[in-house]
Length: 79
Image 1: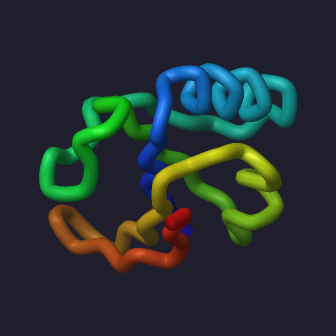
Image 2: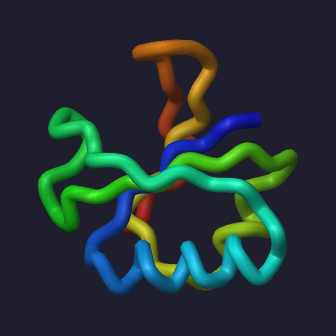
């Protein structure tokens, strides 16, 4: 499954990137879609079976499961 992670802060992006590299998980950073966030401005996408195993205790704004281009479903939100 492919996920899009939205962050509150840029330090969250850096932390998750470091973790992904260490675990050998491929990812891509990109500008966060404006309709999903205005906080940090950076998003990260990755493919994995279970986002909970990847994200752990990293502070993220929300996570969306991407089904196809321009179609996603919110699967986690940190209020």
